[in-house]
Image (cartoon, rainbow, N blue to C red; front, side, top):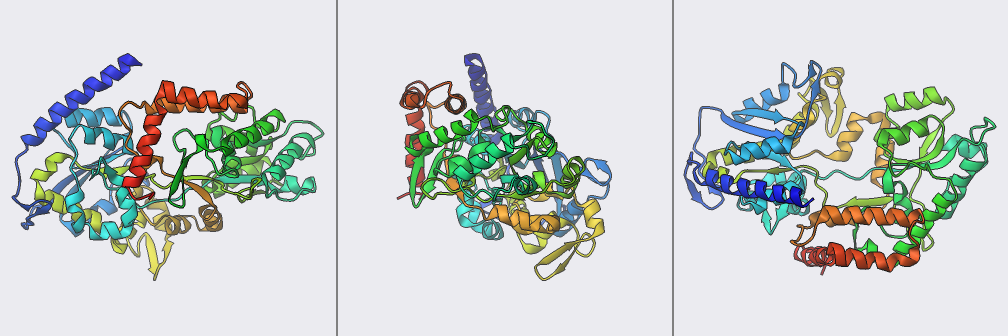
Length: 512
């Protein structure tokens, strides 16, 4: 691990030195009139803009972009640009680092928050703060509070996309409930009793004891159970925001009760024994084959037409329905958590661009356009009256749109209106999508936080996950919980992290 860390440090130093040199040697293409304000000299030639992101696409013509890339053609014509989309999922960061170190910057990069933090620390990203006044359509589309998600070390080093929303909930075999004359569970205790009945009372009627209660993927399988105690057990998202106050779930007294309850499910033998190592398809395969009656998953994994066909073929009588959040002993009910700082990939820009104000203006024009109703519909659905039809706010995708618009998501640079988009794309699943969107979820803020020096995030999170797993599997007694916290603080400097969370949450205006 030390060798790996040294290697990363060397790479960072090389990047920092090379990139700063490259930035300082970049020749301006136009003069800057004042900080953040560039002259906008008209140019007859289209402005070349390259956007690099970690994606792949498949179009109606096969892998890659279609021969007639109607979205790019329309953007080029509308904005007088020459847009290049560089997509790569094979060693994306390594290739980007190589280009950055050589001064061969893409104009726009799609990065995760951790990558933005690293590049910002190396001094190679453009602070977009001075340009925010020009990004009027972008700010209106994304929302002022969500724009703050791109702030790193006090500066706007990235531009987030419009936020999506969390999905996933428990899905249950309603036909099994009916077979055993059981009501839909509404509390954690009722959930346990149903899981036990599914395991012991032959819900599939084959005369064999070959069914189980619950499956899912990892500790999130019990997200609604932890949520019923007001805590979350995902190691990367532990800081809960509630009424301008934050509480780290590991220090919440209810965490021990939640762990004890999850242990009760496991001890009773009603849980898929492989849930901690399951992949999404693994858990679904078991559920769809009729082996398990409750699964923690989202609408997109359960109820799309092609998926329904799979589980109906295996079990024609199967009837999977969504459950709301089960209530805990004190009346709390949260189906899981939602990271209100989560952004997915954000737009970042090389510092060298500050020497190219005309290009900055064109990029701003592009981002504003795809944030307008007209521009966003183009990148969401394609060409009006060809790929979609609009009747006021109601969008209907045409047959041609269904065939040809599967690749357009890579042009959704500032995001999309998530609920309306999904319900338009999947009208048959609209009610399930809205149900999951409206479920109560704990608000966590961890991804707002810049990782402090002296704290190794990866090592600490690995330790947390391992230890919580030991508690629920009774490999460590819950009476040793305080020892776990002491080790986390002494060996993994966890107090450094929680102190940073407290300070930064206040600086961001999340707490008083």
